[in-house]
Image (cartoon, rainbow, N blue to C red; front, side, top):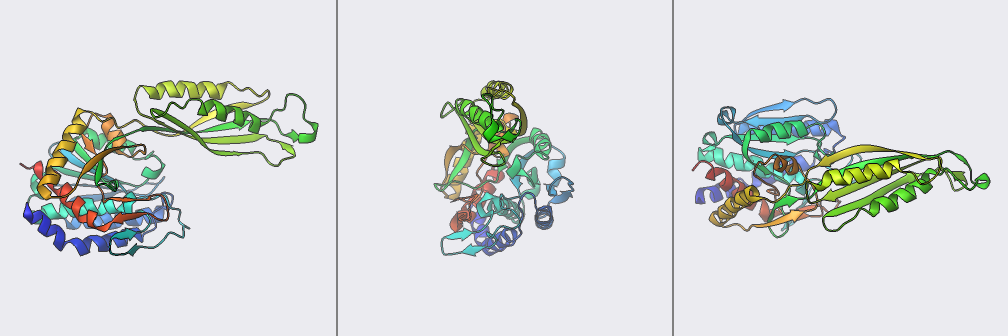
Length: 379
């Protein structure tokens, strides 16, 4: 529809004004005040569209936003999901918004404040066309995706179960890709306890937590089976000084896997490594931090991608598809068997760094793509 393209053009300045406003709100996951401010701004934007929007107050993390139109209260709906938090701490020096002719830069501009703008703008386009009330739509924006969505996972899964399909507003790839698959993830810490002592008086059996940590790193890294299983002991801490036997050590470990059936097998091996201490006088404890099932590319996801591909053809905007090693809330949705397409936000790169950016022209393209995908459900 040419009307969609024309409306997107007229809304371009509004889009970038909102993007700047959101980016300049410091909303690192643990900055509850900043994330709460994001929730208030987006609640107001959704109410103006109009959608029936509410803030879900949270104590443990930032507040969340839930919005529906009237039709979504009566039947299964289309779920739009996104997150309002970023990886950047409150005291970050990456606290600005900047544009040039081609790109926009700022914390969360790709991951994923640009996607939030795409989502609400697509809904505004449909409202201006007079069709929003004919398409059942639910919107959920959470506040702690960057730490694994520990508090919102239940909300996401409950909303997904009430949905016929879902779109997740993470940033798109530089080649205009949307995401049709993601690896699963396990995140955990190993806490290792030894016995403190003077290094100069150590005997044959030295109860060093750091020594045991070294054995466990080798064992964990031995679980790697690229490309399907990737294990990385990426954070190592321990000891008090070079002349002291280490009483404590800890490992922060990240695991990625492709096949759902591998998750329990990997966990069994991790538990075995935890329990088996090679260094006399040491012991270890496994502390699970986060987990997400893989987003497997199946026939349902291929079908929703085909619909998006046809929508992109109708809109005259580019599209491709990719499988990513990183995770998102789409993993939870896909695991329930709900058709889901991820990476619907603007295209960019270098997220999680102070060079994060999006390609400006992709903002309007992604609004058109999402609006077309949603509009097709009215036909």
